[in-house]
Length: 185
Image (cartoon, rainbow, N blue to C red; front, side, top):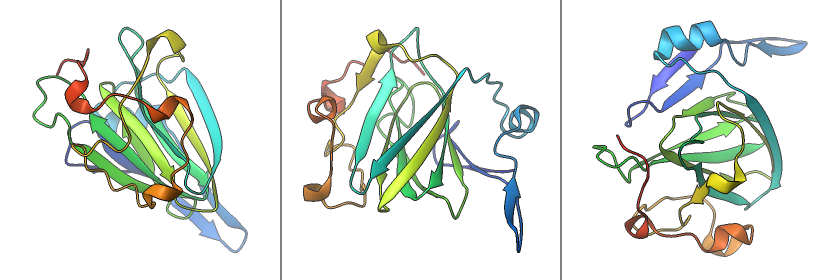
């Protein structure tokens, strides 16, 4: 696997080695030993999730508050998404900045989002099947989120605003400047 560092420390793009021929392809989607050796991150994933969404669906920007914070390793097995991680750690030199990466069934890229980041994605293809590994169990009582279209975050979701499809829950989250982050750098 190849690890691509981003502009925010601790946020990585993971590019697996893909072996293809006339029959199709094979790749190792996760190897704990190699991930730790190449990133320095010692993580134990305890839950895998999958979602299927249509074009224009935007999920996020979500996180779990302490003590149920989550790191995630995400990927797309069908379709194409724009995946985004926003640094919400107080005192971080990159607080409020984000990293965005396109994940697709063609590029096989994965995205590692550490604890202390809000996470979201927008579906760019007709449909997308999105998978993610989490190092903490889902804890609904600790859910938190930021407004997806906060002008201070200036995220280009690559979907026209009138085409964005949100859950009822994702319509009314606070902006970053209204948010008192429980995460500390």
